[in-house]
Amino acid sequence: MADTTHGLRAILEQHGALLTRRADGRLCDRAGQLYFDFSAEPESVPGAVRRPLTADECYRSGYAAEQAGQFKQALTGYRQALNLGGPDAEACYGLACVLYSLGRKEAAAERFRQTVEIDPGHAPGWNSLGIVLEELGELEDALAAYQTALQVAPRYDEVHCHLADLLERLDRNKEAEQHWRAYASRGTEAGWLRYAATRLRRAAD
Image (cartoon, rainbow, N blue to C red; front, side, top):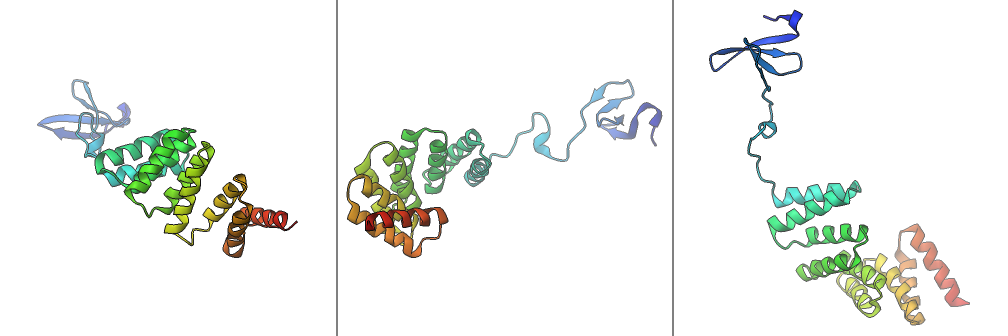
């Protein structure tokens, strides 16, 4: 039974009282007092207690935000994941990458260090630590980080390029050439392949 002349869509009974649902979804009693309609999702009810997120859910929220370029939201997600789940290499690495994207290089370096402390075999963590340390001017530490990345993941080809570039900065050109050749022989990224070929031609001149 509906009174469409007044924009009402239904008549409901709640706790013994007759309520009508307006077209805007709110409920009102016969005296005209308005109520909010109940949602199908319990968490959306004002005052309802929401189920706490798990560490994994926070991590996935942080990762999704990072991929969308929403770095402040990503920081929150990764930090909550670490708070809830304790030391975790992937959450720590994600947090470090976001800090780096925000230009907070010192903080990023610290989180990359934590990543490889938690998981010494985390090759992307070592590589990224090398990148940020090099940008901070800590060249010897950067060199050690790149070398460790290759030790734990010899097929991590990208590291050869970063390592060769740094060795050239340190005037260790013969060693650099070895790494350019290593990347040129099996690397896949077109930009790095062109760059490696350029460096090898220069070394041959």
